[in-house]
Image 1 (tube, rainbow, N blue to C red):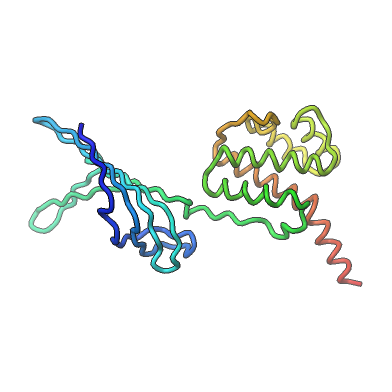
Image 2: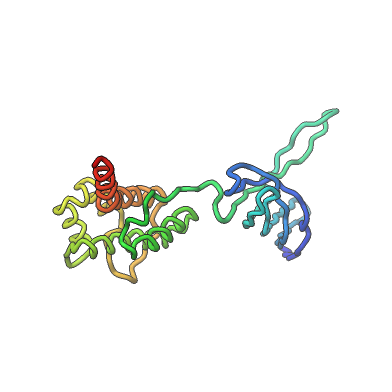
Amino acid sequence: MTKSLISSVHVGEIIRCPCRTCETESKHTVIADVELQLREEDSHNFYGSDEQYQTIQCNGCDTISFRTAHYSTEDVYHIEGEENEFNDVFLAAEEFYPNPNVSREPIDNLGWLPSHIPPIYCETLQALNNSQRILAGIGIRAILESVCKDLGSRGKNLHERIDNLVKTKSLSRNDADVLKLIKNMGNSAAHSVFLHEHDQLEIAFNIIERMLESVYISPRLLKVALENQN
């Protein structure tokens, strides 16, 4: 097998890609690229693949993102054209960073949370949107720890502190049980990390947001509403 690394072959090319800012597919310009080409053949067979790594810029809003594309002779389709001729079409497996298809928005009124919680919340949300699952899991646990500390919820481990949140009605029993079912979510050891499934993290983050709204935000909203009545 032969390997070739080439650069700047596609610079200036226009491609259509999803844009996380425009929230639609739009034209992008390749502003930097490197391509790894693999080739292997014998008297009977040929295999080739191209891995493209590109920095691209949206032509509409100037947002810059990163694109990878994989092409392989095993992913080629033969499309019938005119006069019974067949054209080879290579399908690309594309990935983009940051992920343009994930745009979970933060909850409203973050400024009403204790000052040390919003930075953790925002970084955790960013990790979740970027599919950085280890960081998202650590962030969710950090938010839980911060809320427990702020509310004076005690216990020798995070599981016990979660149970105490239920006793003070800061967290529902069902939500507490779900959090503890998600593997290692209740393990408070700083060195203990686990790669959770994305849907598990989404569920856990939903619970975290409900708790933040219930404990900190809803009481403030009610207070403001009552004050406006007077």
